[in-house]
Image (cartoon, rainbow, N blue to C red; front, side):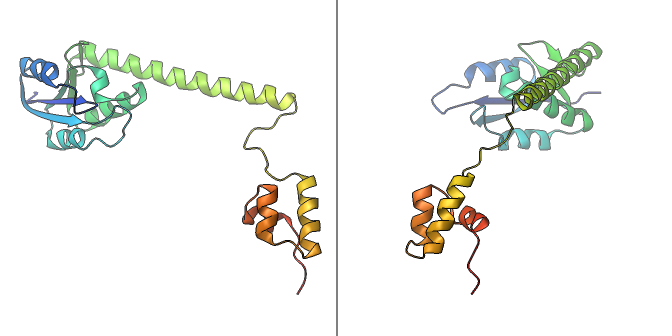
Length: 188
């Protein structure tokens, strides 16, 4: 059923060495290997995209370690789910994960369930924290730059006509947009 093993390896900086990964991928029977130099935090990985685009139905993308493929559990799950939709397998040589086998699929789905559970817990904790903060009189969101006292000062300076809008904004530490949103303009 599975045709070709396609290797993907990544290092974060050009002064690192791919040799350990390349050796592991060759031992795993990879016929084609895509090499990438990119930070683990970067979303844009052209060689990974190229490897996935190269793979045909029934092929297997192989990596040495899970962190070479993705920057987070969420990203790993998304990537492997995308592969699964294209009927491309995934295998990690050092962490014994292989989605081409029933037990490998099970382990991967357990990862997905744990990740979803973790996201749910984070949402619940965030909602609970916001509820407690509101009960204590605190509101979420960005603090307002302009309070009523500053609006009154800005209006008085503007109405006086001796201070420029630019000087008023600089003095109060606000933008022109904030000024014009809050200060009533004189009728012409």
